[in-house]
Length: 408
Ligand code: GLY
Image (cartoon, rainbow, N blue to C red; front, side):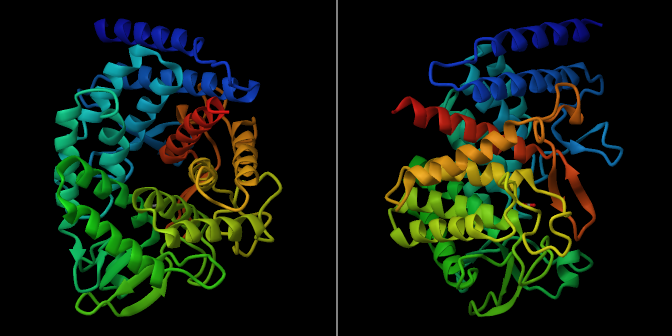
């Protein structure tokens, strides 16, 4: 009973904080988007704090019944997004009642810093601790980032020059595809952790691994039109390419939208960290490819795969729009041909996401902010559902947009 009373108080405090969220630069749709996000996340927090099992629940999506929320463990690749969303909500609202909660949800996944069984430790730790360290306990959180980078470094295959994304344990679906050292384009997102770890520790090994991975991916993952493959499988002994395929797209040669989003975001961050214009050019080229794709819908929310056979009746992927929009708010600050056009494109994506077509009413959609994302159609998993990473990159994009607008 005590816990329920406390959660009601937490909910009330967060909702009160929502009302302070508008800033002088916020347009109506942004203010509404932040207020809506706040209300949904307050409900999510209320559910977490009301749980009586003793666990700290980490929401990821809805169950197949579409009504109840599903949760993940610290080892799941998506475990850093909800804690990270709490940090962004704090940044967007200035509501200090969010800080102890963001801290609690972040520290609940501390064990992830030791994970060596997949490459996603970059997503997990950078989105949670990486955001948290901007506000609190810098030294403690720094140590977690460096440990996580060390764990990720164990997956570096020096002869191939890449971080191996997935294991190919006998019996796994990856093994059934005949892969040896599969690298997925998503892995570009894990490099941010490596750059940060070098800045914190002074150990250039992490940065060198990141640059090697980015260079090899630049050479092998992209097609002449600027789009990318999802999976490139290497011979770890010599770096020869064994396969170029897909895991989550419609076909090996098709355009899996979230993969393109990871590429745009990943090469934007690599340009930020290195100043290497090859990375900048690739980010722009993949963005332009998506922008000019004949199947890009009018509302700019990509189909899960732009080449899927039943377009325009294929499920959308709101997560890829959120990731692209967030990336573009950074990319447009660099020397690109049409920064204003890029920014306007991101604004238009965000306006679609913030509209009732994609933003859920508070209390619906498993208490997630955005509807209509797609996890993996080939695995018959998370089709037209909410996803916590769609929400995370949406909040990040709102924050990046606000920062940009305040500089005008
Ligand atoms: N990193 C996994 C995904 O994008 O679905």
